[in-house]
Amino acid sequence: MKTIKTRLFILLWGMLIPFVTANCSGKKTAEKAGETETTTNTESVIQVSTPPFQKFVVVTTEKAELYKNADTNSPTLVVWNESDCESDFCETIYQWSDQPGKSGFESGEENIACEGRVFPVLGEEGNFYKVSTTTKWCNIESAYIPKDCVGDIESAPIKADVLEADDNYFKCRVVKDGKYKDIVLIDEYNELEGEYLHVGVLNDGVVATPLIYNIYSFQLNDQKEDIIIDNTEDEISLKYSKSMALPAEDGGESYQIDLKKLSEEQIAKIVDTVIQKKPEYVEYMYHFPAKGLESFIYNSK
Image (spheres, rainbow, N blue to C red):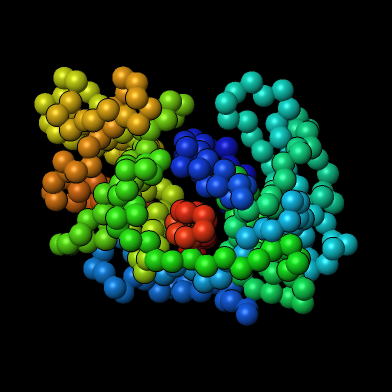
């Protein structure tokens, strides 16, 4: 995966912010668990790998380093930020500390392994855990963190009522029965990117959302049809009528689609559109009773 500067990943920033914020507030496992398995407890039309992460650790020190090898003398993971960037979305580069910087970028002060951040464990070597470090901006898949800098943290299966709770930063609907049982529709709105509808599946207590299964959505007052899906461009868009709208979470004059009003036929139309694209990267959302919902990126190939 190349360094992310594409519109797709930038527009997913709204979904990542709450997890990054939560992360920084407060036995050996398989490297590629369930790589070829697909969901078995549902007849969902979205087929993804079973939840790949089984063990997690949380950073317990004020500042920890992520190492290239299981050795504190090896290079550390660092971030470089685009210089003189006046945009809301400036490019960042993650690389090892022994690599030269790139022209137009400056060394950042970001504490990647900040206290409270959760990492999925891929394995262990001596006094180190090998952890997953892939994000929408970081193309380095793994690094090593000293065991004395982290502690175990337990996850619990996500229930539909947790996803559909009113206090989430997103609006959500989980399909309870029928052909589309366990399909998860997550709708977000923020002032910078607008509205996006994410389509995933609740599988073994974890929400799996292929990163390309996202639809740019907006409301049109004069539209007669409830929903119209446009799949002619690189990006899928969904236009919905005023009758399908409700006020957005920001409390302004913006609107979001009312997921509860979507019929089974309309849900089918949405799902059948997005699954035409083969996913490579999947975002897996886990529930940690001690912290809440957290998401991690996994290369499904």
